[in-house]
Image (cartoon, rainbow, N blue to C red; front, side):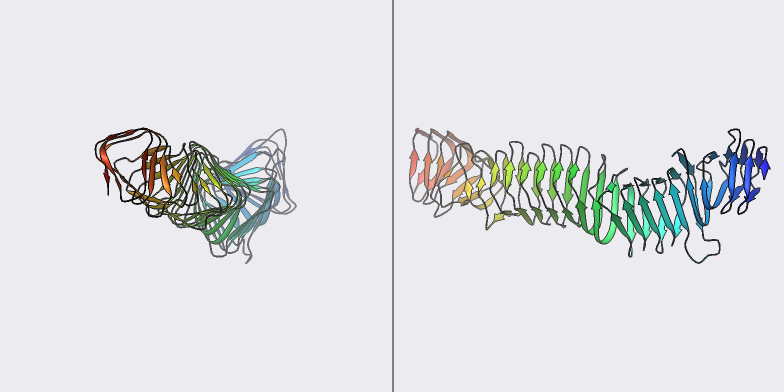
Length: 482
């Protein structure tokens, strides 16, 4: 069939049968249907084009789309089995993508090679098999995969989901390729993702993953976006970073990271009652936040904390110990702290009446750090303090230790500090000023040594035993010893 060009109306049809040929000598505008059967060919002479903007392109077998113009009002229908490609590796855009079984009881096989296909409208697949080979498939609306459908992405291909996807009893497999989701990606039934070691995930926008059971992804490039997990168990393979404006919210999901995690300024990892397990080290840079609920947080490697780590309940297990820098803040209020190695502070440790620790495998070195307590009883047996340690109270606190305790700075903040019975002693080498009526030190039978002058114009120091030593003199407002 040879045409000099022309147009096909909305109800018109050009069908090229098997082994048939359509030769265009001039431009052809198709508002109706162009149907190319398996084996059919199209020849475009004199740079002619077939413009199917707003029309319908039906294909069976493999066809090149060079010279065929489509837009987001074009319907692309694949009958039984077909494939598309472009020699220029360019992009074709269609509205709806339809895979038609055409009377067959089996699903449709559809391949995309060496090109990009953007689908702006609806796409529903039931038992179909889609293969991307060095190709990109971009769904601008949410596609549906059902009834054993498979989508295989190979050889540097990309699957882009601009508005999420609904996947039921179907699989998505990536080989040396990239998954780019956005919106809500929901997997039900036996659905699954498979990524080989050469594949990656990069978020196109804020993404929610909803799936039951255990899920494994390559560690995603968050690309300035938020990832929310609604899965039972999530494993991220490879080093993970969370940068400015990026976040991972694992909620009730159990999140495991197989390598290191770095959280930079403005990045956040948050969880609720799910656990967070980091196999290697955690670097929380200044301005970065890790916030946990009652779920356990376990860090296998060393912690480097210059941001903020808040354990809101449950257990914080620092197997590799680590360091808390001068801007770092470790809050274990209402939580249990476990150590497998030493943890040193130039920053701040925050505790309260719900904080406890036992079986510490290393010391907590606060000799250059700050201890903040909003109340409760603290056993400091495995804590190192010194002349550069600051102790700040925002609630009544009792401390005990079998070794002598030293605090370079003591800020009572209108609260009472009690030295627990059996403690060896407390030394305050610098000037202590007490000018709040509610501030109090109760030494019981424990020694208290002040290395410099005491200015006690309001508040009280009480003792029922032990020795009170004032090396630099004192100015008294109220002092009782019984």
